[in-house]
Amino acid sequence: MRRRRWLAALFPLLASAPAIADVQLVAQLAQAAPAANPKVLTLATRAADCARRQGLLDGFRHLAVIDYSLPSTQPRLWIFDVVRGRLLHQELVAHGRNTGERLAERFSNVEGSKMSSLGLYQTAETYYGSNGYSLRLRGLDAGFNDNALSRAIVMHGAPYVSEAIAERLGRIGRSWGCPAVRSEVARTVIDTLKGGALLFAYYPDRKWLAESPLLRCGDAKPDPLLASLAGAAPRG
Image (cartoon, rainbow, N blue to C red; front, side, top):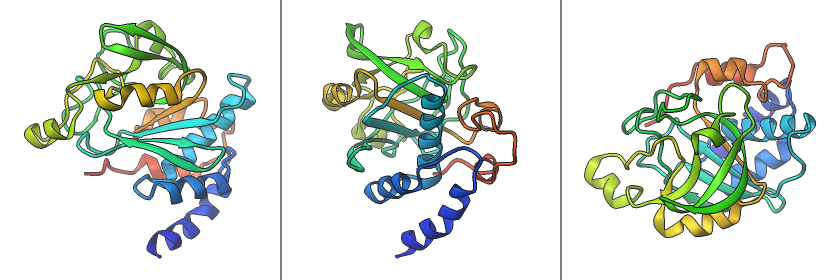
């Protein structure tokens, strides 16, 4: 009941935002994933719509959302079937070793930084590399993640991503910037997302929220949703 009241109060804010958000889709995704922040889901759908309108992508069926404002010990990766409005997976996901310890704090688009990058990605092809079965990611957020391919930022499984390690260390292991998942689910997750799905990585980073070309989509008017997130503190 409390969540329904919160969503009802949130939707006018979403509808008044300059960039387009599919309010009905956000409601479906929020209902399917009660632990996900509806504001973050809204940004993900807005960024996807902007990328489509700019000709960066065609249609898509699957959307992955990472909320890096949550600690790495919590499942903070959600994968949705947006056609059916269903949650398919909710998983732990690593951040880069120079992004932070338990909590993410810093992000970069620079090669060699060993940090995670924010923004919207489109998945590309799979391959077998040093981390096994992996999925290439093409960064669509100019200036924030568009070096993903040259940095080899990919989705892969990793033994350091596990609940056991989270309990022992107070955090999961960290990658060199890749959104690594549990080895046991890597193939299933990658096969769900391969070949054109979208992945949206969020954190309340003021620079990204203010300058991402996909969040405002060319609209310079004040955006109450982005303003509310810019002042938000990481959770956990």
